Image (cartoon, rainbow, N blue to C red; front, side):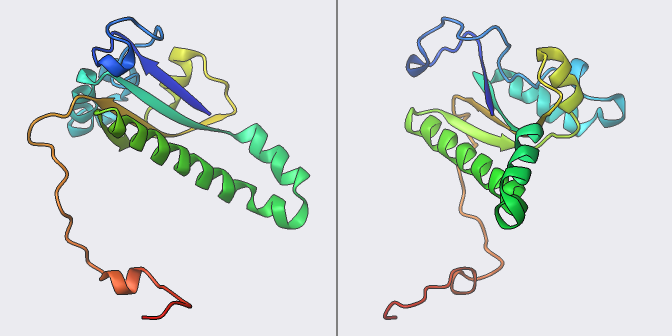
Length: 167
């Protein structure tokens, strides 16, 4: 399950300035609404920073559906239902991120759950069986936030195995 929250998007590929949905940009970014007082600090500041985004894509799993797949799938397939659900959700996250990048937008994937789950569900009347997995915030690239080369702690030849090919 994916919910898209866009309002007043200014990027031409998002249709100019017409609101597409009635949720605010960076749907989970209202610190006063979503962050428990015990977390106010750097977490609140980070989430408040997402307000400048064009929007957020919230990725959900429907626990009721996953449970039914466990039953219908029998011993083998049923035992894999949860794992496959997580993998499917991850593929959707990757697909949406690359699609946004292809449109010239910037995005970052956040995992503020379960910190924000209850308030997000309440705010937008999300079914109780849905489980929030991640939030993909998107908007314009901010100067100084370019992707940098990461220092890998484990070399590629250990992280990636190629079998059956001539080396």
